[in-house]
Image (cartoon, rainbow over all chains, first blue to last red; front, side, top):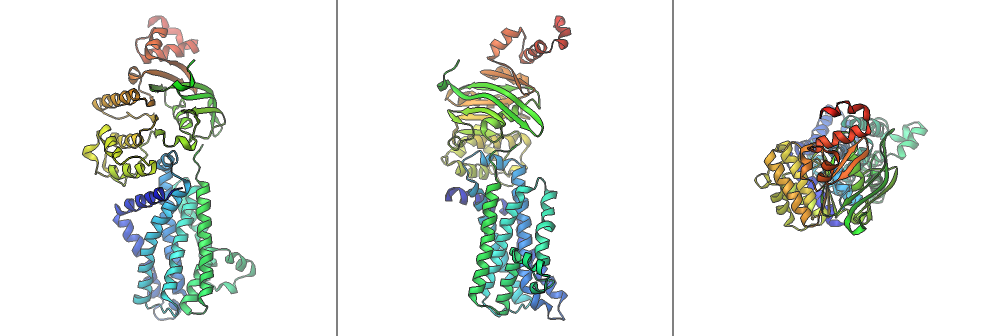
Length: 244
Length: 250
């Protein structure tokens, strides 16, 4: 693995996306529009102030997961991945290059989504806005790395889209949006402790309500980072130079 | 028997299975250095599987493949072997130059390699066009250009001239011979028999086995055929006598 090849890969991915302005627009705007829609739905109630922070975890996570998994699947299917793996490109160069490129997009997406939620939709953030951005960003990057990982197990675009309900929806259902996690049946509560999105939502709620100190949020950030790192390592392990 | 300095690829008892099908059942073959070797055979005979095994991207069930003195697929070979797949494996949402710039950085090749590869594949007029806007033949030339970066010692080209106009095809074969003259070894597959005469050496393949491994002249002399197509048929009839009924007519 070398920095030069990792950065070359990240630069190449960003150049590809630059040629596709519509994707950039969708990537940056869709999470904000969805958050706006949720805020609008609950205009006459105070529900948005309780689920709004979770929305900052949810939509960027889903969008990044989908975009990354489909982009890398395309790379497998067009034969460019095989070409790269017959060249002196490290598996880590490939995965980290992609992570880096999409992390940059995630920064733009997160900044827009947080700004929109706070200043346009009036989401009340009692804690540090920077901490909020950090958690939302870690969450979007986690979506990217999970997308990279699952694309290894999909043979077609149909399959990769099915991973969304299979892997992401359970995390949404158990993440505490529908029912606070401590009110879940014990077994589900334990399972939800092991799902990364739960920690993202907990951390965002903690910052929004200023209910916990920065050390708690830092701990949750570490957990998100560990999941992302795990997905990166597993993603690199699933890249095979030799295939059947 | 060639000595090892003259051999680019030495294959011994190569076995490859894909799913339940055995594609190559104990194939043995030597490919000399500095020559243009044509790999001919009908579609589905195992040409691509053989090439993938040489490049080191194919899972193999047994046997040995040694490339330029190293086991196929070893890290040291990744800069020394250029591979062009049948489908143009380049990014269609990048321009020709952006594609080559990326592959150049991955290979760690020199900056001027990009212009050299563009010139060699006659893509100068299309260099700043998106690959998705190019014709199929142009796209496969971009793929070829990427394989020329870094001047690899061995080029494995899977049907590189499909769909190209005759003039360009002739140009590319000239390029292949210039590369061979400068010491590059080339293995080029084709199912177009009329390209056989342009090769220094021919390997005829069918059903995962080598039917012949000769110079074009020796092959014609041996079979008494007028061209590679005829030689191929004659060899097949020797193996399968029941197809040889009309031999007297030819």
